[in-house]
Amino acid sequence: MLLSLAVILIPILLIVWAFTRTPDEPEVDRVDWKPAVAEARSGAGYPVLAPVEIPADWKPVKARYAERGGRWVGQTQAAGNRLELGFVSGDDVYIAVNQSDEPDKAAYIASVTRSSATDGSAMVGDQTWQRRVSEDGRTRSLVRAVGGSTAIVVGDAGYTALESFARTLKAS
Image 1 (tube, one colour):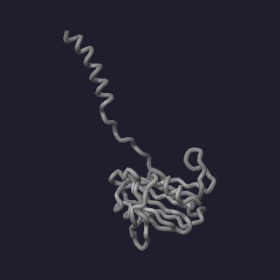
Image 2 (spheres, helix red, strand yellow):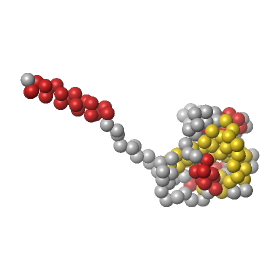
Image 3 (tube, helix red, strand yellow):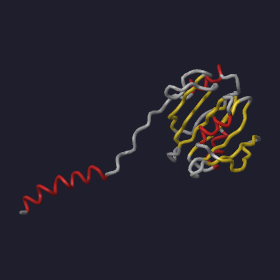
Image 4 (cartoon, helix red, strand yellow):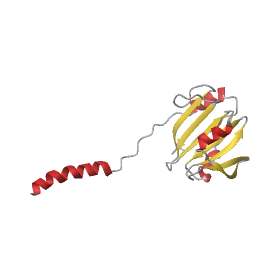
């Protein structure tokens, strides 16, 4: 009887273990973000914001630039000259800077900030940024106009972290 019970229980325990264990964190590849910034600065037609350097424990995970009408994500076309740089901080928080001169600024802001609502303003250095928060309160953003474009710092982080990142951005 014990042998029959073992024949039934061992596969059941293996199945339970396989479906209830927590998998390891997937490894996200680093990308070289500086070529996308250089391309944007040579073709965008507006002052491009980008960090001068990033902290050593940050990982650049997304860097893309598309000119107006060029291929953006999937089969979509960029409505303007558009740059996106994404980083994972040392605390495993994703923070990105997005910038575009798309004519429909409201649609651009809504798409990047998860249809957020205004949540006040913040002074970062000598620049005023509009604070925004998504409906579920998870995603916060900082938005401001930069020489004919709209710049957005966005992440699932508090405003303090976003403002700290925004201080590292330089236009050129």
